Image 1 (cartoon, protein in one colour):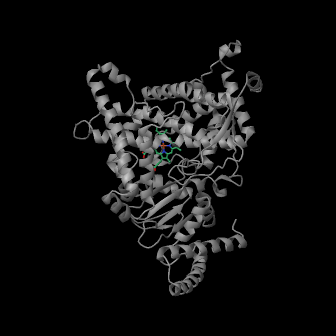
Image 2 (cartoon, protein in one colour; image 1 turned 180 degrees about the horizontal axis):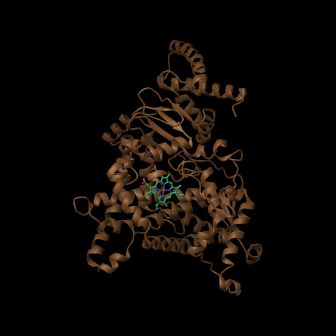
Length: 548
Ligand code: HEM
């Protein structure tokens, strides 16, 4: 809540931020100019205070709401945005500096989300601004494409994602990764009595996993000693440098690209690293497929092999460039989202031991139904079966609850094609950028009730069974025709990894470890998640087998 005193202090912060922004802009040296500008500054401060009553945030001449944004950036940007949205009934208009591309409408209203993502879907594409910024890395892949290019990839990938062969690939590759790589790495940390960065380990797990699904190739990031893999590094650098374009005026990054300097130089080099890996895999796969018999072709179900077997609208095989784009886009979509969600989940679990107990009781209850467990035979090493994972409703609820509070994609965006009006009355002019604030939506009393800031998996259960929510209220996986394609797989992946860890270890976050979100397209923990692992012994698990 904004009390009068913190309203004043936030206003003071904005005045200070405005002052420093002006100073920074003009590089003041001369005292007379300083006096003149101070007078202007006082005038502007009074003007902006008046404006504040009308707009929620002060609008500075030339700078628009940039000084307020600077204040938000100093604290937790997502909480800052949530507070504004709460005070503006779920929607507000952000005015960026003159000539910048920062003007936009920000919303967290489920009615607007349904309008944007479903009812008026064709009027809200990703748009040319987004595509222009990401084209060098993502090309024409599903993530950046609109219209026919998007639809064709979506249709083919969707059929593939729902095929039995693909399900088999995802479950087998995950089982192999968790049991031969993840658990040994965790076990090693116990032997050495050292804390580990669980977020880093999980990021490595999902990167290897999504590369197996997209390329059918394992880069080997998750291994003892956390090796630096050139392809993974190149991918990471290319993503970061691409994101940088969104905070710079278009003409600036285009000039930097032209002269090959700064982040653009880094982007060019890292894209080269990504392309080298992709070209190598594509070349090798083509050779392999040309030599092997049809039976072997049919056995491979990674996306690259599937798309290699298809033709474009002219009846021609897809170009290598297009195949590369398809794979790179899937890797981007699926590489960090599940691992980041799991990291927040383990942090929340550390603070909510009662939830951990219920997860253990559920797991042991399910495993306890195995005939061999009933006969008292040893279950070591215990490997969860796919059908058991699917039965874990409470775990599903706890992961959904973590995603509600810490969605892996905290904000997303669209562009308006034709003039429109949101159901809440907000007028949208052609070309307006719309930001939907997914993080803020999870913290709105109007959507989730007064306990919206509490971690309560029970809110997802009806008679003990998981009940999903409308995608326009719980938008962590997007909604409408562009609903996340990997949603079912992501839940399976998160549940399998979480269950395999929780069954074996108590995960304790290192005392005083700072936990903050990082400002990026994906909501990483800024300082990772340093944890100590403690092995559970048989007697501890027996307790849960009994209370099922
Ligand atoms: C917890 C895990 C995940 C979350 C929270 C998540 C969330 C999202 C969100 C918010 C979008 C919309 C992005 C946009 O259009 O701007 C999206 C799209 C997508 N996701 Fe996921 N995702 C997850 C895991 C995965 C995985 C593991 C894969 C693939 C293996 C995947 C594949 C995709 C694809 C292909 C799209 C693009 C769909 C389209 O534009 O038609 N996702 N996801």
